[in-house]
Image (cartoon, rainbow, N blue to C red; front, top):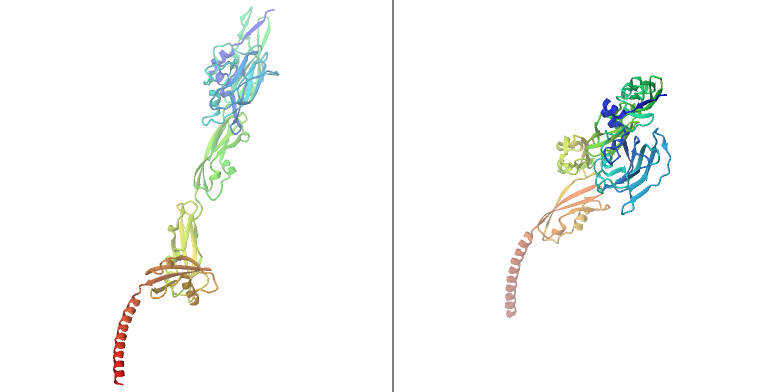
Length: 540
């Protein structure tokens, strides 16, 4: 009985159909160079700070019963921690094998090499390992894996120690690795291959009839109706000779999603610095779309956040979000938030004053008691303005007079306060501003500050049952020097400002001059009196 031989040249034919599809998505080829690790076929996850996990997405082809090694050569990557290798046969069934792994170490006793021999009948392998990434500061993990990790055949590093052995892509000039009665084709869900394209790539030969490619039919197809649904599907082709001897060939078609989801919506927001914009409020402004998954199936995570810790500080801040679909494809997008100043400045000072109608106190003296502070601009006391002034024209008229003050920061936030100045015909108890002047000449013994305080208490200007605080005193150290000095006293809620003027001893000089003349006259009179007294004594 003659047999039909189905010659499988899928690789070359698939290349003719769509070079990009085969080379970008298929891993049933040996690598072009020494390194088997294709960064595009591995996922990366930071499971702890500075601890990265690398895992194969689709098992890739290796040889059975051959020695393979995983090396780390980076001067910045510390070492390999946990690792696991999984092996599969031609039908993608996992092979259970108890292997001996030989580890290589650096000077610190950390793993930098793992060597083993693949089990018998191994067709594909997947790897999973963790590595310390303590010193790496730039780029992405994909570049780190491509440059500093090598999975190669043999136990020796395939180049100078520490050199970069990057993945070079699949080889194009080898025989197909599809063997036996099955093959694997990987296609993008966005542009799935048609089963007729795969059929056109097949050839069948018979030892008697020769080329029987025209006899190939699609015997069973559970792919075509599912080509827009992710999954692994089976298509069985059949070829026969003139005597109806049949040969069957199975192609497994893997429909994959390689497109990352898209983050759109409002990516530039404004927020006031007196209220935190929550993460939920920010996310509500984002729109998630994907070529395959519904938005509800897309995972959104916050990667970095410069805003939350600075929400009350005027400036521009960035938040980075990462969207991941169910196939593991991910993309990142930045959201920028401009923080606007919305906090009013604060005017600090007494809200009411009492002044005697006999005193001359200008409005400027009252305003000098106020300060204005803004959270962003700092001290803006100089920007205090008078909006309404009912006091100045009534400062000698008894009554309560309102003055409206305002201040604005650089962002235009305005604070307005209304103060009351009560003019009375005697000293009031709430807040008192007075100016008194004392004149002292140096003829008298200099008065101490305490003497002056006692004087004001005796004059009933300051009650004698209160504690008096010396707020400012330029008099004490100058009490023997002519000039004008300031003494400010405080007690309870009152304040007394005194101007002390010390005069020179002019009057004393005049008095001494006058006394010297009188003494001379007295001396002359005494001499005359003595002469008269002697004369009278002689007579008697």
